[in-house]
Length: 384
Image (tube, rainbow, N blue to C red; front, side):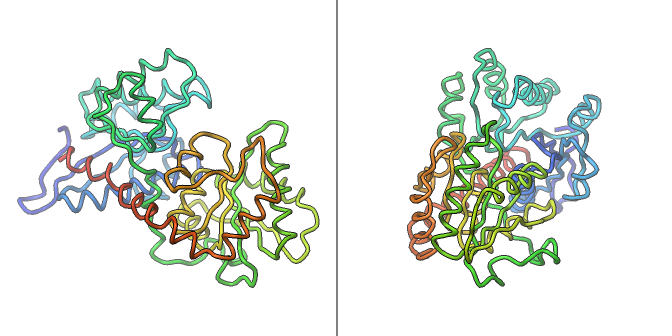
């Protein structure tokens, strides 16, 4: 492999690995995926005597380098990408929902193109816990099938993604089904609030804190109106602190403001928006301080499960149902249908007896946290 060297007979092997994903956009969920991958690669590599030096493809390389202390190059500058790949020992593609065409026709060609380029340069490629689909343009199947078949390791984050790859022509025995990498993300070593001027969460609140993570989805806003009605019903049924957590700024912050404006009379309850920095671990810390969480964003639900915070999910995409199913849960509603009274009752049960929720779902959470390290373990072994 191109840059591999030995640091004496007893030192670790060094492997440079390019990482491709939706990075540098400051989407908390995707940044959490990157940080989780970096943690896992460092730890699993060290356990196997290899030091993995990542090079991240980012839309904002300077920000990515400052945030994570790793080398980064621009994800849209072909010359920089080629140089990074030539000087590397392999490419990791993932995680997240990279291979789907719901966000546009260019997404799949971009990510499969990066993988194909690495393969043309004779670099091993590794697919890291990706969520595959939806793929509505059937001509894209061959793009995905081609790069998957030539990859040294393929892992996806749910059984549905594995089934879709199989239908495209990727052998089942070449696909590992693993959890999202964020299930293994640790809390920050030191735990100050990201913004000391922002109100503290659960630790200092006399009211139970309900984390809320919503995103804009329906163009007419009817889904947000339904969420506001449900949250309003909860707030009027008992005194709670609704703490809105913007996972993708500034869009989610604006969505949160729109929902708060529709809550109506809150009685003894309060509603607020958390103002956090860009560090995913600070958001994980914020979620850990909640007594329960109502989430529409996938990674809000994953953060809650990671920290064993009782959660209620609102489905807008199959990936929400797929994750909830792995915990033995079902969504409380969808963007098309959400009953306020049923929501208030479900959330009330979590607030009244969180220990019962943890006892019921803790074993599944423990299993997912352990399995989330499998891709890093496999990659460290294969790239040595």
